[in-house]
Image 1 (cartoon, rainbow, N blue to C red):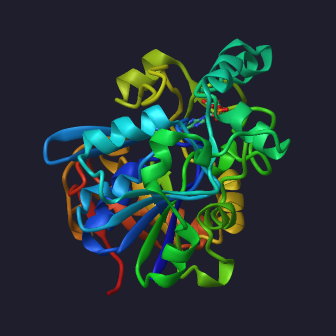
Image 2: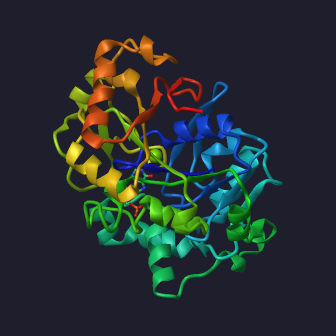
Length: 330
Ligand code: IMP
Ligand code: MG
C-alpha cells in the first residue's frame, strides 16, 4: 500500500495526529515526507509528550519505520539535526541527495522582503530556497558536510518498498497553483506534487487521505470566508496559535464546501479524515466508536460525505494519537 496524506484547507488541519495514528496501525516500512520544507509545523501528541515536527515525518512514533525526506523538499540542516536528536533516530532518518538546501541568506531574505511581509510567510527561508531552485542557482544538500551521513536515493527506497506512507504539508488552499494566490506557499502541495516530491509516479499511489479540520483556520494574509474575531473563536475553543511562528490563527467556524470540493477533486481524495470533532461538538472528546458520537457530530460527518462524495474514514476526537475513530474496512 502506498498512501498519501494531504491537507484540504490552509494547513494545520491536524495532519500530524492522523499521520502518527496511521504510522502506528498500518505498519509502513517507510514514511516519506514531501511538501515545501520547515515552514510546516505538524503537531504530534504521543504518550503524554508534544512533538512539533517541521522536517521529519510525523510517523516517527512507529520506531520500526525508516523516515525519509524527498527530493522536492528544501532542508534546513539545523532543524533537521535537532529533530533527529529529539526523537533519537540517527540510524533511521534519511534525505534524498537531490533535495535543496535552505541557507541563512534564504531566511534573511524571507524575513526582510516586503513581499514576504505582505503574504505573512513563516520566515523560514522556504520561499527563497524554492525560488533559487527554480532559478537553478540554489545549493543542494550534497553541499552540506553535516547532512552527508543521511543522504540516500529515496526514489529507490520508496519504489521498492511495499508499504509506504507519504506525508504532505500545508493545505490545498495554500497551493501556488490552486490556492489563494498570491497569498499562498511557494509550491503546489496537492497529492500529485507530493508523490513527485518523494519520487513516486501517480500509478503507484493506492490511496489519498485528505485531512480537514471540523472548522477552518489560516495564518498569515489572504482571504478567509466567514472569518470571526479572536473573542468569538475563543468562546468556542477554536482559537489556535501557530506551531512554527506562534502567531494567532484566524478562524472561520464553518467548512467551505466549494473550496473543499475543488480540493477533493485535484487531490483525487479517496478518503477524508476529519479532526477536532470534539472541539466543534463538545462532549465527544476521546470517543473511539462512531456509534458513540453525538447525533449532531454524526449528521455533520454525513453532510461532509454528501457534499464531497468521499467517505469519511478517520475521525479525530482529541489531540492524542489514540483519540480517533477508524472506519476503514480492513
Ligand atoms: P511560506 O510558506 O513560509 O512562504 O508562507 C506562505 C503562506 O503560507 C503564509 O500565509 C504562511 O502562514 C502559510 N503557511 C506555510 N506553511 C504553513 C503551514 O504548515 N501551516 C499553515 N500555514 C502555512
Ligand atoms: Mg501546522
